[in-house]
Amino acid sequence: MSKSWAIVNKILPFSCVDGPGNRLVIFLQGCNFRCLNCHNPYTISLCRDCGSCVQTCPYQALSFSNQKVIWQTSYCQQCDTCINTCIYHSTPMTYKYSVDDILTTIRKYLPFLNGITLSGGEATMQLPFIGKLFNAIKEANDLKHLTCFIDSNGYLHQTGWQKIANVMDGAMIDLKAWDNDVHKQLTGRDNFRVKDTIKYLVKVNKLYEIRFLIIPKQTDLQNNAKNIAKFLIDLDPNIRIRINAFHNHGTHGIARTWQLATKQQVELFAEQLKQSGLKQITLPTVYL
Image 1 (spheres, rainbow, N blue to C red):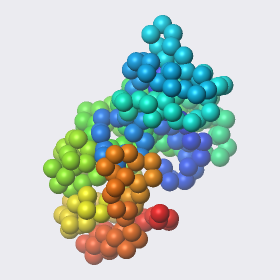
Image 2: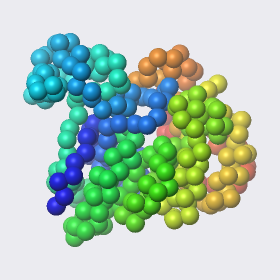
Image 3: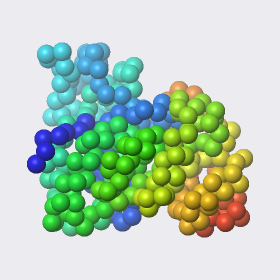
């Protein structure tokens, strides 16, 4: 088996919101967006081993050896002092998993799983690992029934998606804004690639779901419902859509001052999409 490995932030053994059925979700470290409303900003960057967090740890769970920050899990109390110290949007609390390590973890929970989902951060930042992991799952007699999904911001170029299309069963893509300038303001990146990704994944029948996040006075989704609906209907009238409501728990900086999305605002956007012909729309079950 390949010795390829990935930097993993955490593994969630069971989830029913990250694709169809019950899924094991692997959150990979690293992201190419800088979303102002990011709820997990410590997943954005890889640890630079600067060592600034070592002395701040109140439980001596961090040490500095051979120019590397060492995390000692047995001492850690998950107080997040190191996360709050880091100025690079990272964390020393990550794991190094090989393909074999992930397969072992999957088999531990196998009787309860319908599939696995790679999330982040942005999972496609570690694309070679994804390809090898998904290929290993498809080749294993006891695992090949599992579906392999990716939860992505959609910024991967089409050539990247082509590398994993034959071993990936589906992807959930976030469309964070319709207008390119608004998207840049929210994420630091344009949305041309995101729209191209949606088109490509529909073409190869690998798009499972489009996700929208309503942020009052920040996103432009509500004002562009007709444009969004036309874009999606032209691709596939039966496309799945999930609408989420913004909350500021876990956010940092300016996003902590932003208004929360209400049930009425989310339902209004959903109704606008429905009136334009879209049918498969999932709304939040809980509003904060």
